[in-house]
Image 1: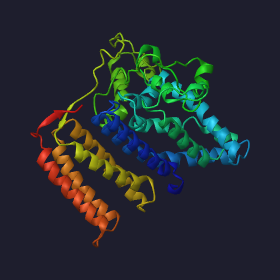
Image 2 (image 1 turned 120 degrees about the vertical axis):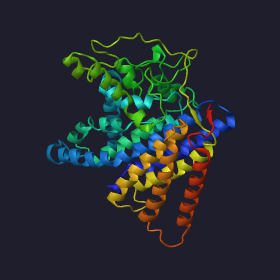
Image 3 (image 1 turned 45 degrees about the vertical axis):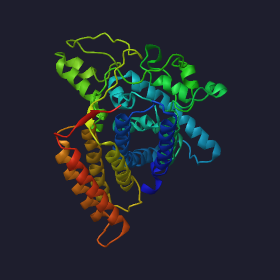
Image 4 (image 1 turned 90 degrees about the horizontal axis):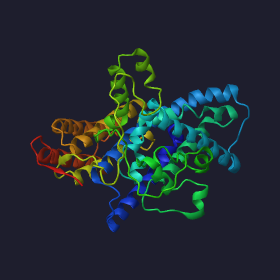
Length: 409
């Protein structure tokens, strides 16, 4: 299964685009990204990659059953069926995406992506774990038509990569291309909280679906990014499950049993009886206050080093590059989540971070040595020890509860 995990191949390409955009931001001194949100986006993305193996397994089992027993045709993949499959994925995803903005429980799954208050390639990586499962609940008709499960999963990854390319402010409008295809300009509108932009431009490959079904808006005024109920955290767990918690609190608060059930399935924004109804005030460039927290000083270089460690752990989990066993992948996935949760502790200067990071450093060194059988001197063993020593010294010098803090821009 790992040999056919499309994300193993797409992830390095996405990382190259991220590095190019970071370089352009630095060279041209643009304010398209901030350090804490970039780290939170990247950490959320790395952790969420761990669910792709589970999603792939579910797709192959469920879609495989439908394809084996109920398919109408047997469709082999060639240049024109490739295009048909891409169009099929895009059309279905348009509606899944639209429902993701219209139904509370689906917005809970999708909103982590929109909670970013900037627009750059790292925002594209900030997809939720539940969104991955949610999307594949709807592509099954393609298996019934006759497309093979492997090809559906592969095309969903390619489609997601196309969507990744829309998340930038470096590319302006693209003339005639915008009449048919979704562009960065169209997708900036989709991420806007300006009232005129809310719930617009759901298309990921073609924009014609929005024009056909009345959800299109052109980018005119400056887009303000974010959501109206921000998670107020850099923690990937909080980012992923924030609105589920909001809905749960509403369900607990209402005294009406019917409302406790239907809150999950009502239109986004609906509130049950017995819960205070608040008027939504438009977020504008003038009144927006972006989420920022005091972080530990001297965190920047440390977190950049840990980003590299995180990429290494992610590749061990989702690919065959490290030849880890299934059990090792599960442990590696848990270690990766611990890793990126600690990043949020650094970004928010949490008092628990010092102990948690020391334990994580020791666990990471032990597991990297054990999983890769690094029992003899080697370059990889040397790197693992050096990174661990650096991390331990830095953590104990600068990440104690009493260590100095600063507000990052």
